[in-house]
Amino acid sequence: MNILETRGLTHDFEGLKVITGVDLQVAEGERHAIIGPNGAGKTTLFNLITGTYTPKGGKVIFKNKDVTGARPHQMVRLGMGRSFQITSTFSRLTAFQNIRMAVLSKRGIRFNIFRFVDKMDDVTRETDEILKRINLDGERNIPASGLSYGKSRSLEISMALATDPEVVMLDEPTAGMSVDETHYAVGLIQRLTEGKTMVIIEHDMDVVFSLADRITVLHHGEILASGAPGEIRKNPKVKEAYLGEMEI
Amino acid sequence: MNKGFKWILWGILIVVLIVYPRLFGIYYTNILVEFGIFALYAISVNLLLGYTGLLTFGHAIFFGVGGYSTALALTHIQGLPLLASLLIGFLSAVLFALILCPMVVRLSGTAFAMLHLAFGLLMYVVTLKLRGITGGEDGIGGFPIPPFSIPGIVSIDMTDPLMFYYFAMIVLVICISFLWFFTKTPFGQIMVGIRDNADRIDYVGFKVSHSKALIYIFAGGFAGVAGSIFALFQNLVSADEFSVLNSFAPIMIIMVGGIASFFGPIFGAGIFALIAELTSRYTERVELVMGLILILVIMYAPMGFLGLVNMARARFFNKEGAS
Ligand SMILES: Nc1ncnc2c1ncn2[C@@H]1O[C@H](COP(=O)(O)OP(=O)(O)OP(=O)(O)O)[C@@H](O)[C@H]1O
Ligand SMILES: [Mg+2]
Image (cartoon, rainbow over all chains, first blue to last red; front, side, top):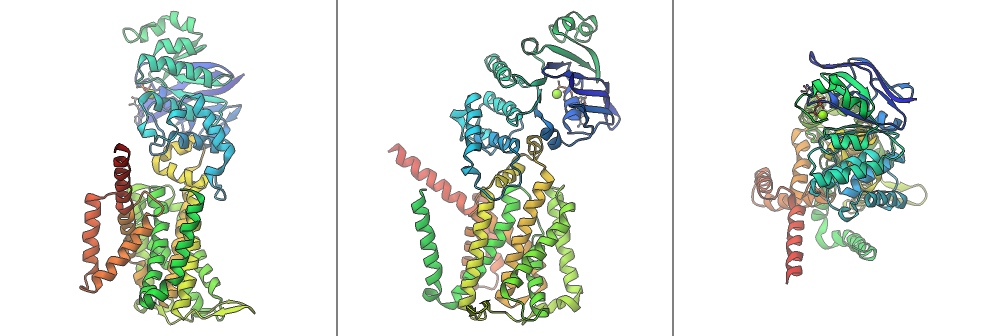
């Protein structure tokens, strides 16, 4: 069963056509990679699915519900998490407070003005557990802006997962990482997304092949091919689009 | 800081507030009341500015609405109890905030600031024009100040400055404590999250506009309380309360006291009260001195007085650690 689908999705920015009829299909439990050259429209596709923009045409179906035009917070509450290509954490809040924000949301604690947040022991415990799992317990009280690049990326990814979503959308989680950091991040993503549906935009083909069981290739706002990693590797159209751009 | 120490501090504060009028006399007691009013007012603005990252050039709207509605209520409703008049000030400001909410919650940055400047000017002009209701340039004065009374138990005359001081301080301390608590709740975390990265707040699952609305209502309502107490204190309200200067005053207080802390505005209000008192002995141009101080703060201590204190503390402890 498909947990996430787009049907004939289109979008343009003041006439610049960026997404032109995308039918994306993501099955439940799948680890789905979206690849494509720079400017192919991958991030825009994420923005249309997660509610950043309302698509100009087509539909987004999530868990058999038409969610076209839903706002980001609604998508989160429906069970979709998202991380960003460019780190987007709460820079002046500590690592702990960053994760706690997501934990509060997950527990539906929104307009609570009746309790000290620091005294919510179960929230604190859950947040600390997450910090430990992502190896950030040593940086618990450091502001996000003071974290090393690798750690701030870990935080970025973990915030998308701390709301415990069913589907998690990761936009180039390893962007800008060193080889070691990438290696670590892949392990982290594997651990954290176990049992979840994952859609990941990724340039690094090693990462794609180690994480994904299905790949969609986006090119000029269109799906060029979609299939198992082995098929994509052999696909002549894909090879042509990537000519000289990427080693597959 | 441990718990016992905190209680001792509270104890000291309360004792100081109680004996203060006896030590300093009624003139300085009235200065303290005014300081307290502006501390609450500035704190309410700092909920928006320091916590949520929203700069407003028109918060005097709520201060003024609080003051005018209390004054109007006392003028027109005979036998209105004191606390009810205060509550009317609060609720009117809340109502005003509710009305403005749909327009302002989607805005931030310059648009938010300027829209409030426009609303503030509008209120100022309307207040001057609606002479029949607001008294125009004369404002509303001489309305009855009811006693603080619990029927059958006590009735305390509020025209006695000493008694009014105690009443005002109790209300102000309660309001300020409440707002402090407000910033420490889960919702307080959402506020600072909006300031840091409003876009991400959406992707964590909170609705930014609703959250902003709630903050706005609190910030408006408590500025209303400040205005309401100010009206009772002066037994007068005038269009000046809606003036641009009265919108900028809390911003200056926050800048001078320290934007990054809940208590910054309290220190800022204290510093301003002190400077106003000292300079008024030598010159009429109090604003000139205030302006100069603001320039110095912005140039050399952008985190305000509490920022300086924290820096000094860090330096002191570092030295201690090194030796
Ligand atoms: N908000 C916007 N306004 C105007 N044009 C935009 C906007 N966002 C993206 N674009 C354009 O849309 C196209 C697709 O951008 P998008 O960010 O989706 O690509 P991408 O596949 O994520 O690329 P990359 O691999 O570099 O991240 C680009 O040409 C980009 O310049
Ligand atoms: Mg992108």
